[in-house]
Image (tube, rainbow, N blue to C red; front, top):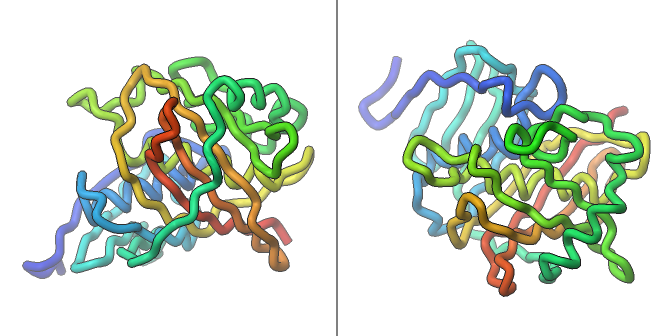
Length: 241
């Protein structure tokens, strides 16, 4: 039963927005649930916890109540988003040309655990986002030059928050991964400061910030070509046992 204060929507995740085969990309689904909280408003950061993989092409229930949004499949909680009062640190700016040059060192070109990933997979241009973070010479950063496809806009021609969250997601994993390594996103906390425009060029930058057992920690940012911060995030990944 839905109360008067609760908003509920039935949603499905198209197969295009997959990460690992058969499930949604973590950043994309985190951004989608985040939007249920704030819409186009970005007054604070949102913390999104992924409790279980989100299936594709399946009817799911997205609920918004007060300062919480949840995504469920039947009685199973998949994703939960809450508003947080937190300032997020951003890795330093890497100019677009330098970020694009770093792509040549993308570990996923050697061994990619999820080659069909919407964000960092080697899919056709315009279908996937093709963000390939590689090591920036002389630093602890990975970076990629993001050329925003025209095909990621909504029906109004706007790049949705879910796309920006997607860009922030995978880079934090690749800041850790060596060939043959993988993990799944467990939590992503993000704040968007500015819009992203289709056809625009941006730098995606990330760094590893620590490891605790199976948990991998990282932070990431999206920058405009002049160094203006677009969005920042911190992530927790869970490596397989």
